[in-house]
Amino acid sequence: MSLRTTPPTIQATSFALRRPEEHFLPGGTPLYIIEAPGTGALRLDVVFPAGKQHETHPLQSYYASQTLRYGCQGYTAAEFAERIDYYGAGLRSSVFMNRTCISLVTLKKHFASTVEHMCRMLATPAYDEERLRIRCDADKAQLRVNLQKGSFVAMRTLRQSIYGNQHPCGTLVTPDDYDTLTSQHLRDYYDRYLSKGPCRLYLSGDVDDDTLAVLQSQLSTVNGQQSTDNSQRSTVNGQQSTDNSQRSTVNCQLSIVNYDTSYQDSLLARHSSNKIDSALAALRNCEL
Image 1 (tube, rainbow, N blue to C red):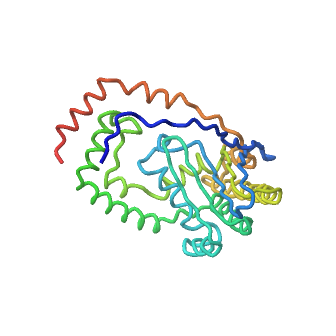
Image 2 (cartoon, helix red, strand yellow; image 1 turned 45 degrees about the vertical axis):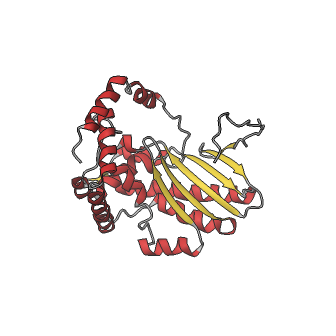
Image 3 (cartoon, rainbow, N blue to C red; image 1 turned 90 degrees about the vertical axis):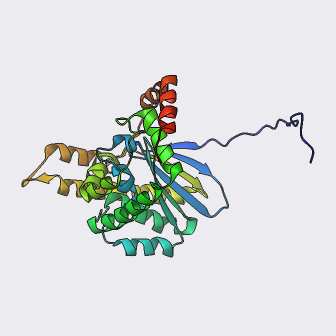
């Protein structure tokens, strides 16, 4: 076996990344399109500027997005899953520190039907308490298993030592957090960050004018459903709250959001050398 003593010569190649086309829907929602003609498939990503750092209770953002597909107006969890599977589509929720992404992957010929179900899911989630308890119990059991693994505990200890207990990146989930989480926590997070907009849309694949018309039509429907649903839930002690009524009107038009990077900059500023040193010391002293 020969040992390489000099690095290989790398031939420079030029390539251009395809830039997305920027559009704005009638309500002001930004839509970014990357076309791939002839594929016969589409992917739609709905990105909300809210994530773990916006939680008021541990696991709130994660389960508020993950359990969206566990039933909605007119469908139980099983019925909704069956409809999505029938069209060969896939729904996925991803939660990050400062954003939440809901993704739909589907065949172009079924886009109208699948995006209708996606919009219905976003507009009228059930947040069933029984389904939440089943999911929490399963995830809590998995956490207890992971806490017996040295690598898992080491990573948690390192992260907490770097960021601290009060920082979103350093907050560690415990088994008790699963027990105290309720569907009302999810509903509160949804009402504040997911139902009101603002959001950004990313559409890629075999996009044409008919696809855009379907998307615009379904978004109009979902905004109307959100307004009606929020108006009904804003009634407190027999009298509707004026503030919630105004927010319901805002729901009729999703608006563009400007992402604030100051929070990320503050995270980088905290990564000083003394923090790293203390984290490594804590990791060495960790009892696994």
